[in-house]
Image (tube, rainbow, N blue to C red):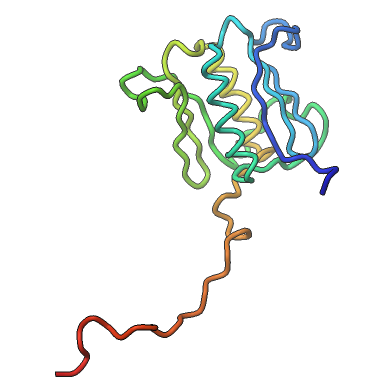
Length: 171
């Protein structure tokens, strides 16, 4: 498996001008579960990116979200509103966040809500992320797979007790 890369989404501050004019985020989505997300440096604080990269390392790297590749530039297309899943960012006040966290996600089957500490991204970033997530998660370009059961170990058969029960079975 030396030629295969671990699936990853990496978040960056865009100092090189990759983001199209009028946007504050850009997603470079490539085959093989690879994506880079670029944020305008005046709209996101760096500690948020550190946490996003840490969460992404586990979230995507261990296969809890998987890419369904179709074609180049697919994430930049308008959402088709297929409703496959719901994922969104929501800026919240610091007292609604766990201590020392800048982003925190709450996930259930078919949903992933990202709570972002106020002051760490702009409302414009939140809105553009939500539009991108409507396309990526909502249209099934990236899909949840943490509870699909395919990678779970098979249940073990019942094994007889090795030791007698603590309460006697006869009097």
